[in-house]
Amino acid sequence: MNIYVGNLDFKVQEDDLTTLFAAYGEVESARIITDKYSGRSKGFGFVTMENDTEANDAIENLNGTDFKSRPLTVNEARPRREDDNRY
Image 1 (tube, one colour):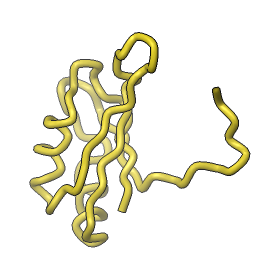
Image 2 (cartoon, helix red, strand yellow; image 1 turned 60 degrees about the horizontal axis):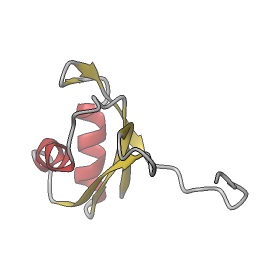
Image 3 (cartoon, one colour; image 1 turned 30 degrees about the vertical axis):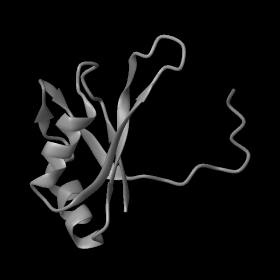
Image 4 (tube, one colour; image 1 turned 180 degrees about the vertical axis):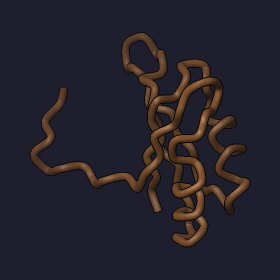
């Protein structure tokens, strides 16, 4: 399952997300989305977990909790729309 993680502190690294979600199960990948010009974090990312039960447990337990002094927004990621033409 692909999980959206929002409201991240700009200093959070992918390893931080992996460690946070690993408490609920095996993490396949963690990715912080960055600005392609500056390389600075956009304040959100995605975590992929193979097991849906573990992923749902992580979503339920982490949504709204403070991480690095910011309340996280955690939910199942929605697939990109075909007509999403952001350049």
